[in-house]
Image 1 (cartoon, rainbow, N blue to C red):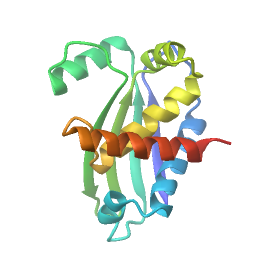
Image 2: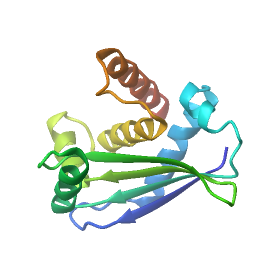
Image 3: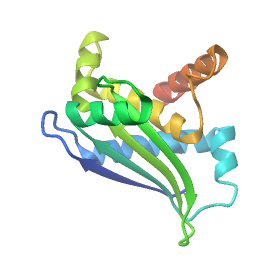
Length: 159
């Protein structure tokens, strides 16, 4: 499966290496594809030319605005995911957008005694799973399923 990732950085607080983000996302999606994840298999049944994903890094203010607008929560969050699952005329499948606040990711990494990239990997995996339709807020069993899959992904990402 061919994957195309667009990375847009609209914040200046934390330096984020776009090439590394792209590489990590490709590894996550490839792992899900190779392990025949049911949700990914279902949406790629038409064998799209490319699977497209956008990642946008934003600061606290923008993230707070988006979180308020789309989730009704007037606070800064680490990630928001917007699944689109739209087939384009070109034969590509636009999976959706992942909006990330790297400053929040950095503070969570410190809180959990992780590196920035370890926490960002977790956030990227989490966001991709949301784009595929996983939702930890639906039920406890869905939350467990999503957490377990995140752990499998993260284990696979380790060097």
